[in-house]
Image (cartoon, rainbow, N blue to C red; front, side, top):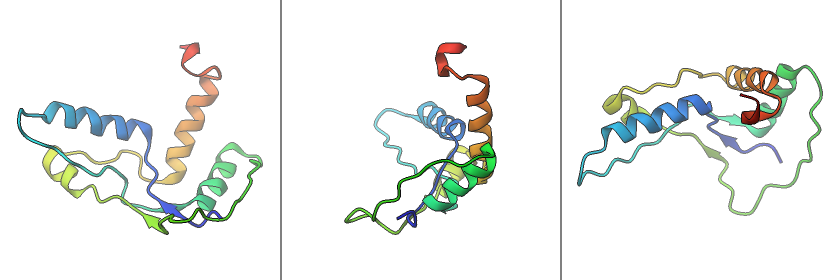
Length: 114
């Protein structure tokens, strides 16, 4: 139904968090971190923002919420920030979608068009 709230993160920020975690691995030490922006957006907000960024309608098909879906999931990355110094570079949904769209426009074939 588009009302579920999730913490959407830019792929570059996610990759950076993974690299930092890999570099911090020590034998016998388990590392567990939540990675996110700390901000929640609904699916409807994602659709509206994507339409705004691309400047045209994006067809959607809304369904009812799946049984068991949690209303809201937002990550707390404070431990990751404190221990590894990570913070997201892209914090707003608009910025996340805008940079992804810019990449897509310059790479219409995806990674096949390096």
